[in-house]
Length: 174
Image (cartoon, rainbow, N blue to C red; front, side):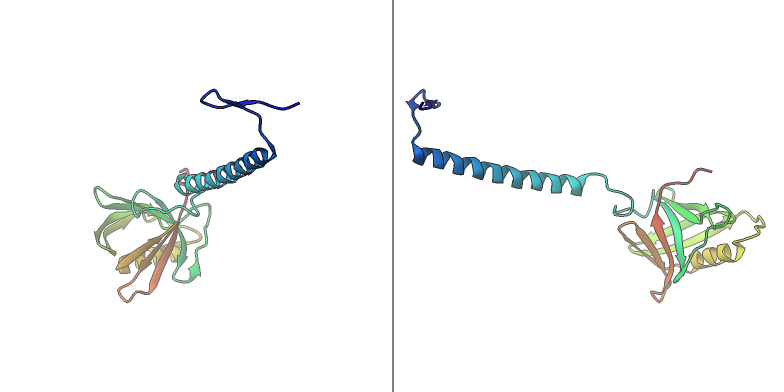
C-alpha cells in the first residue's frame, strides 16, 4: 500500500524512499530546533521570573535586611528578636531592631556613600543581646559606604573595612 500526500497546492504525490528519508531528517531537525527553542525559553523564563530571596537582587530601600554579622562575627538571635533594618526611600528613614531595642533614624546617600544620623531607640533592658545591639548601633554610626550584591548588603567604614553584613529576608511578624 502506497501513501499519497497532498501538498498545499493540492498536488498529490507518493513519497519514495529518498523523500521519506528527507521527511525523517526534517522531522528530526524540527524536533531538535523545538528542543533548543524550548530550552532557550525556559532559560529566559528562569532568568526573568521572580527568584527566591537567596538569589534575587535587592535594592537598598524597601527590603527587610536581617543582620547576619558584625564585622566577621556571626550574629546571634536572642529570644526570637532578630536584628534588622529597613530603609525607606522617601523620606530617607531607617527603622529596625538591634535585637533588643527598636531603633529609628534617618540616612543620606551620595552614590555608594551612606551616612546614618538622628538615630534613636527604645531603652529596654534585655537579659541577652544588649552588647550585640550596642555594637550594631555603634557600627551604623561609623558606616560610610555600602554594597548590595544579590541578596547581601554590606556596610563599610571610611577605610572600606566591613562593619555589618545583612541578608534580605522575609519580614518577621511582630
